Image (cartoon, rainbow, N blue to C red):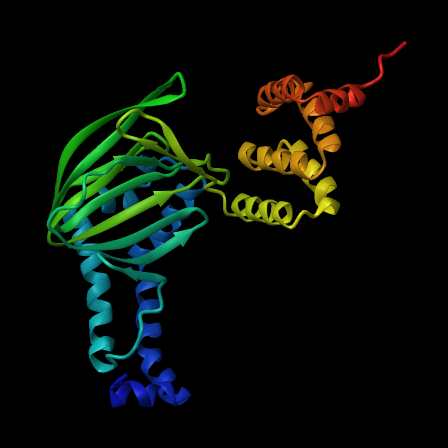
Length: 328
């Protein structure tokens, strides 16, 4: 592999690395200390804490007015161009990601709220979507440059376990503003002319509901995933312990299943793994859950318990043994 001499020198010299990076770090710090950016940062924090976007005048102005948004991003770019020209191997010290067809850069963040730049590369025609994902996050975005066409999906309800989804072909161009309420609306870009620059604001609640993916053809739920990072980590841990057949983890799984403060999907997975590891403890757990009046997984637990009892005599005996003794 051929490596440019300047890059090779930078890789082997920490002093040179610091020299290249210092102007970029200083430029970002200066931008963040500007009065208008400080005001925006404060409103971002208030918005994350539950303040309606409409009452955050600076933030809502950037996301709803093309001239305001363009000036905001233009000032940001101008502050970085000079140090980049002086140190072309310097890196902007902001979180970013580059993938085929899309580059993202996070301008500011507070809790579950993020303001980011998205750059979409040219896309002549994408395959027609077969499904749509509805996530528990509020989205507000404005197109700063370029043009694209796509489709917006609206989840209008669930009937007999199947989603009803309306679709609307949409054109996105400079100045287009889009707002997506959480859990019921999403969009897909099907074509991008040249490239498109997008400024996006997202807000995710502290305890988001799971993201759900439905087939567009008939509304069938085909995938569901927790949007809570902690729950996702615990979900994976529970699955790994189950795969390792760690029966010593059953008490912890029972405690998790009974915890009303955790996601219902995570709790149900703990129930499932408990049953797989220890049928007797699993039937006891189902019995305890089914007797809870206000537990969201009480009814599913009762239904599963009855199904297992009807299908397996051994499990029926275990369920009978797990029943609490009547009070005399």
